Length: 116
Image (cartoon, rainbow, N blue to C red; front, side):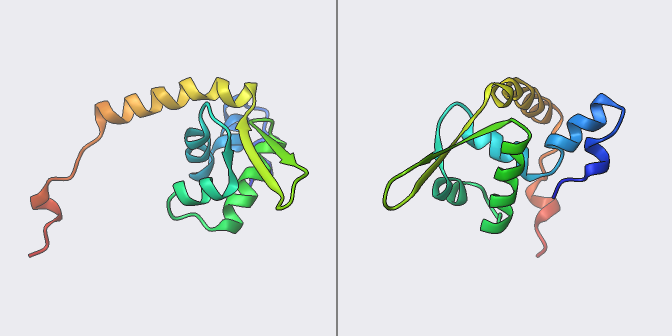
C-alpha cells in the first residue's frame, strides 16, 4: 500500500522511497529483471506474498512507470509484465544493495540459532 505523504514530499529521496520503498516492490523488480514474466510465475517465485498483495504491487509499479503490463486478447487471457526503461534503470541500484548486503551481512552461526 502506497503512502501518498511520501510520494508528495518535497524531498526527492523521500519521493523515491515512496515509489519503491516497501518490501515487495524491490523483490518483484529483481525477479522480473530483464525478462517478461506472467502473473502465475511471479506468484510462484516471490516468497510469502498473497495474490491480492502481488496484484496491488504490480498495479502500483505500473502506475509509477516502473513496469509495463502486456495484455493479450486470447482465450484464456494472458498477461505479462516487464520492466519499463525506468524499471530497468533501477536494476543497478538493486545490484549495489545486494553487494552492500553481501559485504556487511552477518550470517547467524549454527550455535546462535540452535535451541537444543
